[in-house]
Image (cartoon, rainbow, N blue to C red; front, side, top):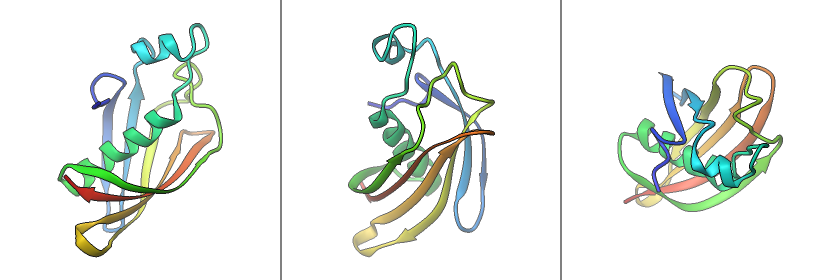
Length: 125
């Protein structure tokens, strides 16, 4: 399930030699928030990881899939009601592994809160 342009939109991206910063806006009216949870919407952890996959694929300029989730730390609840500005997905380290796999380390945050730190290995589809 692709979440871009339904659960979130990319507002801005800045690419560097080592990684990138993606500023995203969340769609608080998306059906996922109506189920998780009505009146107190929370972005499911699996959606945070999926968004990470999608922005990494955009950065790498090819469709990728998750080969392995190495580590995920959910540090704070991400609600579209509480976000201070845009949510940032920062790809801090992208390294090429064997067989065209890419190891990606990223951090999810806004101006005041860090929501998650994700490390995963991706492979081309």
